[in-house]
Amino acid sequence: MSSLDAIQSPADLRKLPVDALPGVARDMREFLVETVSKTGGHLAPSLGVVELTLALHYVYDTPTDRIVWDVGHQAYGHKILTGRKGRFGTLRQLGGISGFPRRDESPYDAFGTAHGSTSISAALGMAAARDLVGDTYNVVAVIGDGALTGGLAYEGLNNAGDLKKNLLVILNDNDFSISPNVGGISRYLTRITSAPVYRQIEADVWDLLGHVPLVGVKAREATKRVKESLKTLVVPNLFFEELGFKYFGPVDGHDVKELVRLLGELKEIKGPVFLHLRTVKGKGYAPAEQNAPKFHGLGKFDKVTGSTEASTGATYTQVFAQSVIDEAERDPRVVAITAAMPDNTGLSAFQERFPERFFDVGMAEQHAVCFAAGLATAGAVPVAAIYSTFLQRAYDQIVHDVMLQKLHVVLAVDRAGLVGEDGASHHGVFDIAYLRSLPDMVLMAPRDENELRSMMRTAVAHEGGPIAVRYPRAPVEGVAPEPARLLEIGKGQVLREGEDVALVALGTMVMPALAAAERLAKEGIKATVFDARFVQPIDAEALRRFARRIGRIVTIEEAVLAGGFGSAVLESLANDNLTTPVLRLGIPDRLVPHGTRAQLLDQLGLTPEGIAKSVQAWTSDTAPVLP
Image 1 (cartoon, rainbow, N blue to C red):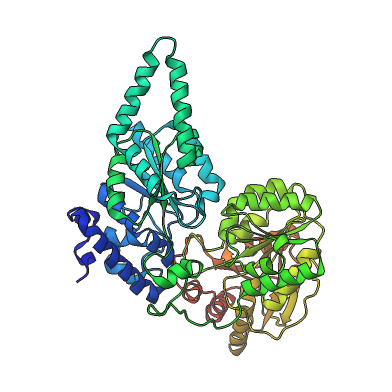
Image 2 (cartoon, rainbow, N blue to C red):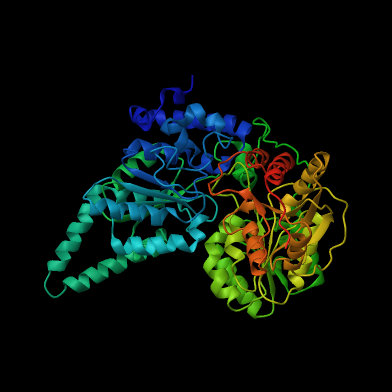
């Protein structure tokens, strides 16, 4: 019997003796590996914080006390301890629990997170609100070393040190060591300096020195210099103390009993506290320890061997990656930028081929875009590959640093559209709406891998300012390869002729539109299918032609309808004083949950069957309007 069976909530965990916690940690790891091998998910991050998760819920009175997980992909153990073990088999499945903390899923999820560097700011806000109403609960922010590369984390640290609220920030350092782990001496000093008696002696001595006439101030300064010299020698992290935090660490993040003791003592310290833990990503599962990047986030796998299901073919990301290499071979000005995603954006291959022209800026999308702008001013052609949902963070830089200066920056907008199991936080459905409003921004989307190669060729050659290519997290269409070519900016392509309705589709929706046209033909409805290619500038000439010759237009996009491609079509028609009926198909005004991409497209009616059904119903009720 697993020790987890008796734990339905953190209250049950707190009934156990502390000596039982290592056994619970072992059982939790076994459960995580067993379940995630069947569902897929972020395994290695959660394995690395098992002991920390247990210690936090053991020491703190959650959910009254608040735990804020940065990114949140390490919160699987937290979900198991907080009443969701019975549903854990539904992780990331349609209708199941989310892979990230969600406030509407559990009162134990204090803050919804799905990207990095947010925990400190959010936790500080909670602490400030707590003090405003005179409450006394504790607030803890858990942040990884990767998330600490984001500027927002330092903004939060800076403000926390200034406000001096009671707040604990825990750094889960599992890869990039901010300071070296100096073993037993560090642990010994941490244990001493965290003890209440030490802090009291320190405070008493400080107060006493301040009252000694004449020499008090000098004595205080001398004492401070000695203390800082010692800390610099043994624990070189004065940076955090200069910000206003009391720093402790590095500490072994896998010694659960020591963590319980230490957290219990740190809970009594007033003001902002910073605890530095050293952990092993994937801890306790050999395949994950040996290949943490692979097991950071993955699909189903064999829990015995760690082997994953074989790939069924190339993806748009892989085609993009090879396209950038091809363009860099042709043009020595091309450089590639990623924000802590070299593997997932496919740019690891570029890094191997052109290491001096590759830049990983960390989890810092704002910096990535501004950095790209700087490169562009000096004659480079930067290609910044960033997930659509994460590019939202850099919107101000896109506007002020790139667009206003009309700089030739190529934005490779990966994971555009529905991404599947990661859910609403990761769906790339807003990029059309937030990019197409910018003057001089060129925005395009490929229907297949050949078009993506040609769009990358076009983007690199374009000299008229910023240009963006959006492409999905999906396998390619499998069309016969064609050489990349330059596309005429703002011009789409008719793929099928018909006189009853014009299906104007963008990117991933072009192939489903063609298949829908086949189905409609069997019902006696002849459809033109038009690959728009460009959202901005839009092919106004083609739209005028469809309005005047056909009189009915259907727009199809894998993005939000509000402000999206369909809205751009309506605006273009309005500019020409055309009152053509338009049916817009896309993502409605609601958040789309997690599930496979195929399941979500089916629910939204963005499959060939769904498109054909919507068009057939609409055309039966709508007469064409010709000018």
